[in-house]
Length: 89
Image (cartoon, rainbow, N blue to C red; front, side, top):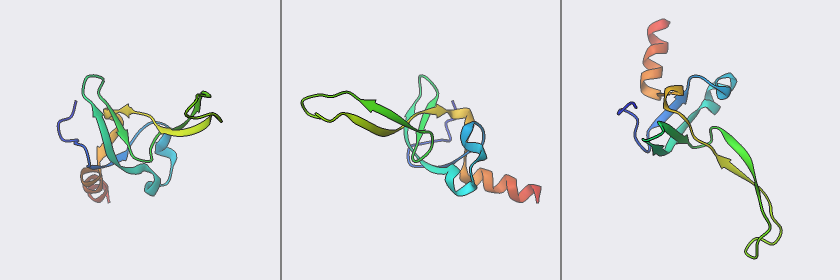
């Protein structure tokens, strides 16, 4: 796993389902890193709808948006990404 990515860094999604989105929607901050599985949770990226069961605390049940982890190889630090784009131009 890349040791350059830390919690709180700004990253860009470079591959996967989110790569087709506009640039502004592919950028987010790292919220959580799972080093054993090489997965990263990025704020606002890879959001899925999750069903909640009816419980005594939540009698209605319903749906909640949850940010799911993506593999660390699918993201890149925003600073590094910007340098590569400038180099190509």
